[in-house]
Length: 292
Image (cartoon, rainbow, N blue to C red; front, side, top):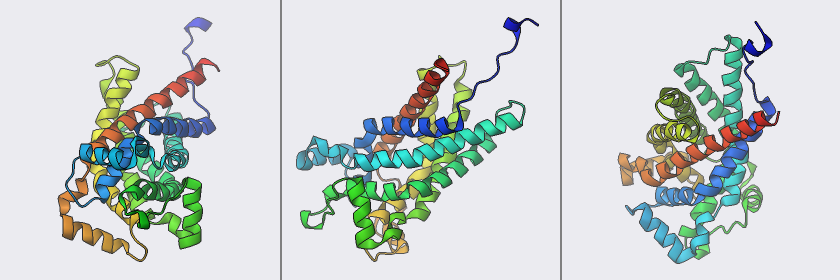
C-alpha cells in the first residue's frame, strides 16, 4: 500500500485544550443568550403567571435594556468553571472509550453515563458562581431596600463569604448537582445521538450542529426544569429558610405544574446556548486541526 493510500490516523485535541475549548465555547454562547437566562430566573422566582415577554418588558421599563445583562460576570465565571469541566470531562471520557475499544464510539447508554458523570463533577466546581448568578439576576425584582446590590461576581462571592460564611457558596449544591447530572445526561448524550441520526439527512457543518442541538435542548428542558426551579429558589432563599421549606412552599402554593414555569425562556435560552456552545466548540476544534 502506498503512502497516499494509507488510512489517515484519527486526530485528537489534547486533553488540556478540551477543557479550555469547552469553557471558551460556553462563555461565547453566554454573551449572546444572557438576557434569556435572566428572564428565565425572574419567572422562576415569580409567583405570578406572567409571560416571558411581559417579564422582559418590565425589566426594560423599570431597570433599562442594559439590565438584561445583569449578572454577566457571574455567568461567564460559571461557564469558565462549570462548562470547562463538563465538556472537558465528557470529551475525555468519550475519546478514552474510543481508544480503548479500537476506535468504536460509545453507545447511547455509555454516552448518558459519561454525560451524568461530567455534569456531577462540573456542577460542584461551578456552584459558587451559580449562587452569585442567581442572586445577581434576581436582585432587580426586589424592593430597593432589600437588594443585595452586588457590584460584580467577585464582590458577590466575597460578600457571601463575609456575611454568610464560605459554606454558603455551595448553597443548593445538592439540587445543583442533580440538575447538572440530568442536564448533561440528556444534553450531551442526546446531542451525540441526534448528531449521528441527522448525518446524511442534513448538510454537515453548522446545519447539522443546529438540528442536533435543538433536539438535545428540547429533551434537556423537559427533563431538567423541575430541578432547575428548585435549585433557583433555594439559592435565592432568605437566610434561615431550609431547602425542604422551599420545596414544600412551591408544591403547596403553586402546584406541581409550576415546576415547568418559564418553559419558553428556559428552552429559548438552553436551545440556542446548546447550539452556540457546540458550534463554537467544533469551530475551535477545526481551527486547532487546521493549524497543527
